[in-house]
Image 1 (cartoon, rainbow, N blue to C red):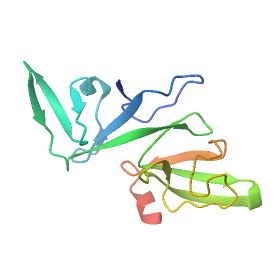
Image 2: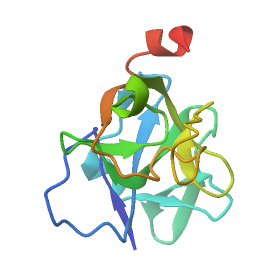
Image 3: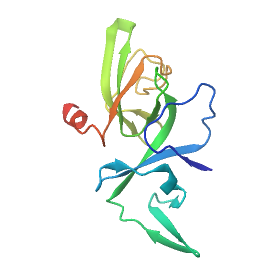
Length: 150
């Protein structure tokens, strides 16, 4: 089952996180696609977007115009859903460690780009100790200035 998220949103405590959730950003118009539009979209196994126009007719989107931002299954300390392309900051009390960076998928897990805290159970895994020290600060689409600060 695929469920869309539309714009960045907050998760409710106890909400099921076992469905694939995503947002779609229109890079040409610089906006998130409206949730009502998502009911006509299918994501093919190769990751391309297809528009269902009715009567068994599907039309592929130009892949460079849209970008899919997949929900990580994690929420930040304020209850905001975290997706690929989001920027987070971590203020960990162990030796006052700090990290600011973009959430990526590295081939087997969601993590932070260039993230490494040696005291974590899995040092390169941003979410290995949960999210109580992680805070959403923006995303690569609506806050491109964060890309420049990396």
